[in-house]
Amino acid sequence: MCGLSGEIRFDGARPDIAAVERMTDRLAPRGPDGRGLWSQGPAALGHRRLKIIDLSESGAQPMADPGARISGVFNGCVYNYRELRDELRGLGHRFFSDSDTEVVLRAYLEWGVDCVRRFYGMFAFAVVEQDTGRVVLARDRLGVKPLYLDHTSERLRFASSLPALLAAGGVDTTLDPVALHQYLSWHATVAAPRTVLNGVRKLPPATVRTIEPDGAHHDHRYWQPDYTRRPEHAGLSAEDWTDAVLATLRTAVRRRMVADVPVGVLLSGGLDSSLIVALLADEGQTDLATFSVGFESEGGEDGDEFAYSDLVAARFQTRHHQLMVPSDRVSGALDAAVQAMSEPMMSHDAVAFHLLSEQVAKEVKVVQSGQGADEVFAGYHWYPRMSAVPRERAADAYIDAYFDRPHDDLARILEPGVLPDRDVSSEFVRAHMAADGAQTALDADLRLDTHVMMVDDPVKRVDNMTMDWGLEARVPFLDHELVELAAACPPELKLSGGGKGILKAVGRKVLPREVVDRPKGYFPVPAIKHMAGPVLQRVREALYAPEAKARGLFRQEYVAELLAAPDAHRTRRGANTLWQIALLETWLQTHAIR
Image 1 (cartoon, rainbow, N blue to C red):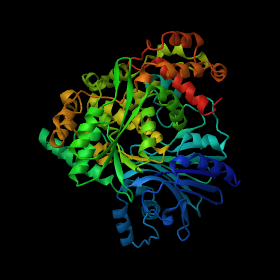
Image 2 (cartoon, rainbow, N blue to C red):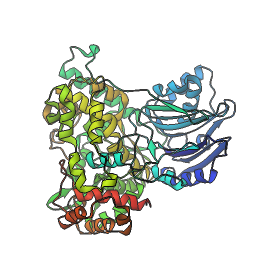
Image 3 (spheres, rainbow, N blue to C red):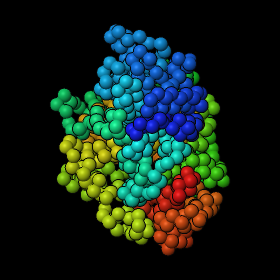
Image 4 (cartoon, rainbow, N blue to C red):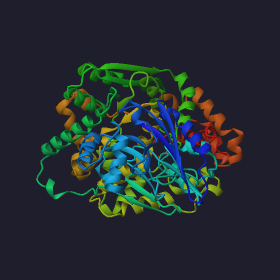
């Protein structure tokens, strides 16, 4: 896992090496173990390395092959790189390292852009063909690894984080009204390719972009499950489906143990992370390090689930670590978490993940995490309501259940200059729901959540918070074969038992019943949810700062109304509205966006 950057010129000029160096240096937390630069002709590449596979200098990047005249930078992990290396050797390729980066380059030489179909893992990469001047960018199927772009008529810059692009300079930092509409409609999610800044876009998941020397480009989406029932699954019983999910999840967890360093687990005590620990124990993993975080109670709400994580740690004899965070530390930790955000993310557990990652990185470099299971296996409480409608009404049900607020309410929040004149967020959902495939309303809901919303909320959050401490997080529930199987699974099996029914059935085979059948928990940070004193003071400072007033983003009378009753205003999904708008303004100020 690493951080990559680069610049490609289309105007005949040499790339700005100093800008690439600034991007590379801003990515230092993602790759504390090494730094590299490469440039030739119109292209320059930068890289920060976190040593996980092939700890020698043979795996350093940018990596160039003088004979084949290609160069590249890579972020992520291809879990089946050893099998691919053996196959490529059989086809005549010779290797000078034991890294998965070299496997990516040689796979590109052998199979071209179709190489991505052979990769099992999480990745973003850039390959430069030195002779043709063509550049290829690619991102993994579920968008676990980020890739941000600043594309003008003169040049393209790309990086593993948005702040790295800002460090290069010359970015159009005006605000994108459509992205702001999405942010305030979808719980702070902004769907690819947009970001809140007009000048920055992100490569969508499961996409290969080929860029020609003159700047022309075309995208190819190489993967998308269709969310329909498959003929080969006809006749499978509920028990058959449970066994299939268990076997596929077991493979996904096993794949993510590929490393030349120890691999731990972020153990919340919930079903998903507990399943990872249980399956690793079944694989014979011993001395497994597990990690949990909790917060002081506020407003009568508990801030930890240590009772469950302790139970799982004891059952499977892990080397368990607990971190309890006092409320007075949350406001200070908030600033560091916002600094680590490539985009504004309002979910409270960003702070939790950032604090936990700081401690975990002192013990291990790689962890497995349970993110993604709720979207893939229908674990959220709103799914039954969404699913209880005919397929043709799926968009209406989704908008009613998922959106934070209707379009008309935004006129009270935003100043007119940044408010679109139509409901662009609902238009996006309706277009996505109308695409071919997705047999039932629930299938359409899960397709949208898994391939759009999840990528730019929990997936991005985990990457940003862990990588800010040089910690690689792997997510077995986003193994593409497991996602394909879940997409084909009958909706009633996922909805049973109050949600995630089939995953609970898997859990009953390997976990204590009290972990499987407990009420669903979340990752609460009560000091933020209930606007505890220090957090409220930080929010007030951000919204009344000179930068906020100069920006003129939010209506001042609305801000005053929220601050007069900080814990009273909630979105339709129950989030604190004051926190939602304050987080956006705080992020803009933190990253010096005027």
